[in-house]
Length: 166
Image 1 (cartoon, rainbow, N blue to C red):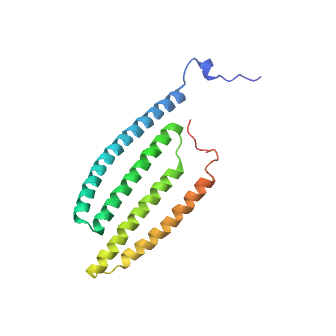
Image 2: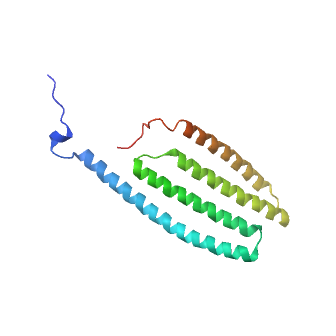
Image 3: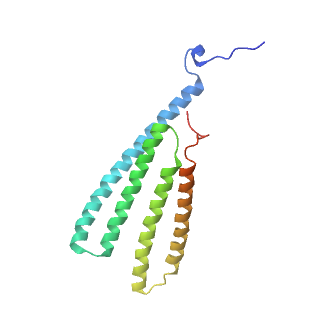
């Protein structure tokens, strides 16, 4: 004899598992919103620094000022991508891979720019640039790896995720 399963409606309310899921989801949303607020504060602080660097860069000129401005703008782009990723995560209740790969790619390019500027400075100072060349080689491999991963994520990104949250 088969015993009928109870449905949510037959229980007269939420069970402990559903209540725990709802509570954890609310905690997750609160943490995401807090992180977004912190990132927005960082955007305003770094944005003010960029404006200050632009003013100083126009007055002093030079490649170093331009690289510092580019570094800060790329950092702002990384933070903007993180905020976008949080927004998508809140909307879909699912972690998406592609924005993180883009953030990683921008971060690596940012480091390449800084290391390239350091090579020039080290050459002028007469220092050994071998460590920087090894780092640039590793960063080039990382760019290639992230680009391949991004391409694969975009190609196979339309499939339903097995790990999607409720």
